[in-house]
Length: 224
Image (tube, rainbow, N blue to C red):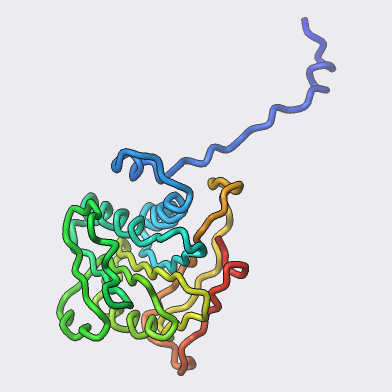
């Protein structure tokens, strides 16, 4: 018989909690591994989808070498095809801002509109909307144009993609959510390249907020 005291004196075996990779279904569907930036984007959106919560995110490309627009539109296209079968609204903030759609293997053609032609969207409802190449002065106008036609259902998605370093203005109907805790599922040895900030869409504009909120977009101050 083994010595009971010797057994009790041995250190307890450490237990590890496995964190499931919720990006795997999407990666399996497109048939390749996701790079670190893609994993961060898909992971944030999948957390909201699995929790039956609407997704509102600001994605900041912190490196000039990485453009997140194609990764965003491919995931949202996969989401719209496999889950909800609805069209995607894309609103570029610059002229010819939809060049990233050329050659993208999408299942259905997105509806591309500018904020200046937002009146043509009246009477329509979209479950998925993307603002690309957001600009500091025009983002608030674009968000105000999308808000009336964006569904507030639990499966709706709104993504604002930004590549600048200046302050970004949000309308009073949107605010920044507290940063989510780090769950330790990413490769910290690789620079993230992007910052993902969750937004909260308020039911009505705050009566106390008469001016647009300025959000500093600086890589060192943003949660990853």
